Length: 342
Image 1: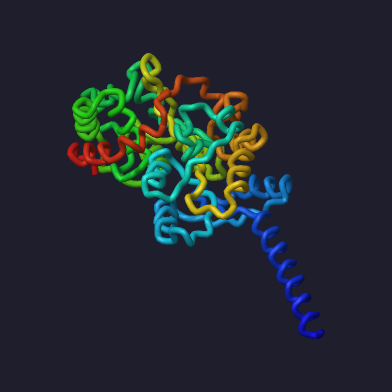
Image 2: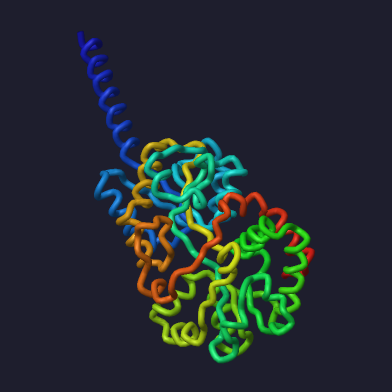
């Protein structure tokens, strides 16, 4: 009799434990994110408040997170990868750590240009990579497109990051798609010949260098410039205010743009919750918050940009599907090496 009772209690306890474990398992989502915590945590807290799904966040460098996913394999706890640049998302895709997912709401609100055709990843925020010029030294009418930066008039006047930077690699990858390998390589060599200094530092450093008189033109992402203009550091505000923004290629393909995006991992244990989180981050409310918090352009056309971005006016963006940037990345890297782009 005691054996029967004990067995029954064990079975009931086991059932309750299984139910509890399943409930706990179903009410969480594990995220690997390359974005700064301060720029994503408020959104994740809001998601938990609205859905009851707890978000476990691991923040790290983009390349390190990809390596971690590869190393962990089937044992990874990660359900969702959030990272910057379509090139990095493509690397994760080709590394075999992502899975394609379908979502009617994501397909509806995220333009085709900003999502992987088979659903391996979806863009969540948008940034442009225009030309910045020092006011009083360069006249806007002297500028036209990226290709014209090889003009001898810009000799020793350009600052840009190194060739190992994914943002520059994606810019070159987009040019390969439009102009071909030979023309793009010729352009890259001409750009290198016009550099004011050997590439170093991040995007903010290119803007600071231009403001300090080390060059007259800088290539950088818009959200870095906006962050400097609206930031707490007076020195950065002063530097950014010395520069103007120019939207290149408006008479042709448009200014180069890229994304931060999200993808469901191949071995996600909470796949449904991961999809729900992407859908939440693509919602109108979340897009509006992020657009103002980080001065990035929303991927949705029905969400307004921040006042800083609005002050720059509208521009024509390149419409090439961003998955092409990843596909062309190896060609871009080899081309930049041949061009002597350090």
